[in-house]
Image: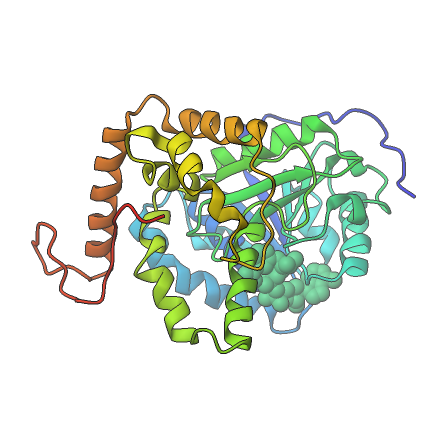
Length: 342
Ligand SMILES: NC(=O)c1ccc[n+]([C@@H]2O[C@H](COP(=O)([O-])OP(=O)(O)OC[C@H]3O[C@@H](n4cnc5c(N)ncnc54)[C@H](O)[C@@H]3O)[C@@H](O)[C@H]2O)c1
């Protein structure tokens, strides 16, 4: 089904040299990307077929701009560097990078990506914001599928740093490496995946939580309010600055992840969630322990505990849940910020 790539990806220029970006599809995500790239000092050309797209896009960028000013604009960054054009080919004709953010419909994405591939200059990478389609399923109609890849953002792309980068079966690994570097230069936090996985990484994790929440509401086991509070008053406070694996390692005390797994491993057999656990065999145990050591990057358990504690206090303060100038006292009795509970 997939057309053969015309050859290895040959970038027209290094990621650091990009100045002109095209945003194709300018709704919530395309508009958010446009705001981000403008704030980082790029020239942005946008195209969207909706009749009122330009008005909506400029309104979105205007609304985002105060936040972007707070974050600090790149030198020369200006909303005046946004151009909205009536023809798709004009948007990408001289683009050095293309970000596609059209509606999540497979057939639309397949033909649009082929159109973009035909119109964009050779050597320009074309990234899709898709929330879930593997690029393998979208790149089949393109003449040069080697330069097509997924660059999956989180809403709003001008504030949430994460972008997950992954190619399809016909994507050239050189294009993936180029895009990952480009996004880094453009101020994003990049996760480069070496294989396609439905939902990528972050959405799989979000979705597991989301489905369990829906189950609990459907069964009358918990209210929406309690589900939300269980995260914002509980583990969500930690996840803003330390991921779920490293925070769980701290539940193992001085023994870290190894002790945590030995202690709580049997709970994996308990019906604590509808999602089935994998077998906690030796290779998985080792992978978790080694992964946490790598993530700790030389920091001791004591240092990580101190970082976590300070991080929770910072988040509580930043979200107005500590009295001004408080050293750590909470002003709401219902907040449970920490503890060695997993
Ligand atoms: N909304 C999110 O939180 C989120 C997060 C990450 C990724 N995404 C992905 O981003 C993409 C865009 O989603 P969105 O939430 O911005 O949707 P949206 O409906 O807000 O915007 C889609 C835009 O695409 C335009 N459009 C329609 N047909 C088009 C075509 N043929 N070519 C180009 N543009 C066309 C529409 O006019 C609209 O402005 C989807 O692939 C979605 O899965 C969304």
